[in-house]
Image (cartoon, rainbow, N blue to C red; front, side, top):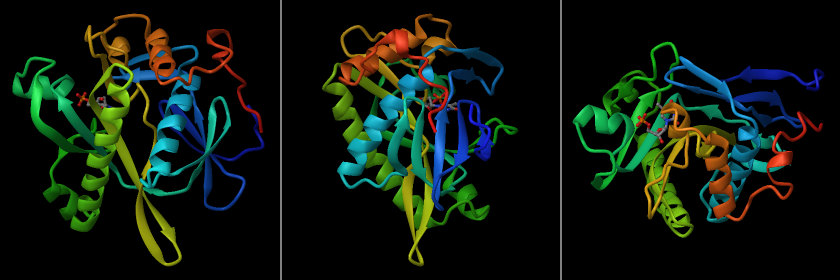
Length: 255
Ligand code: TMP
């Protein structure tokens, strides 16, 4: 690791460093994996490389569609250059099919198709265990205003439409996923753009034919073959790193 760089923040799965120019940040994808508020932890070799590659691919597609994201470019197998944003402290979950906490909360069998896509908000706080919140909480506590919430919802639903089609095209069902947004200040104006990552760490992806889980639920539920599942997602998207599994660990840092 290059110690000359200034570390801004270390999260559970990523490290942020100061970028080369003002207004930029370097995101480093780790192999560290956690679930259930870090009660369950492991290092999954190659996960960071796969998530970087999958997220790069999806964010590039979104940028090209005119859906604004923080992604600028990939620096190496584990690192991306992104725009610095002020993260809105919310996790936005979009659900198409019942699974996970929704199934639990409402007693819905996992795999039940939802009557329409559902958007939920959670307050980003590890200490509090990311509690679910309503628009009332969000506006009352000043995390976002009603206009911001409208923008976030509209972007989240457009991303859901695009991603559902993208994954269906490669035989995967997008069950649900989590997004984070940030505020970008440019020429006295503020725009809300997509931040964080989109990868099997924060999506549920099931094989269309067999319902096999190809996402972080393999880790949460001890199903095994976690990296293999992420690799299969990359393979189906046609973006498996060329060197294959052997090279998945990648360089720690090339800077
Ligand atoms: P949930 O069913 O556990 O609420 O998860 C919904 C989606 O959000 C699922 O695709 C996994 C993702 N997620 C995260 O990315 N981070 C989290 O901390 C949690 C709880 C879920």
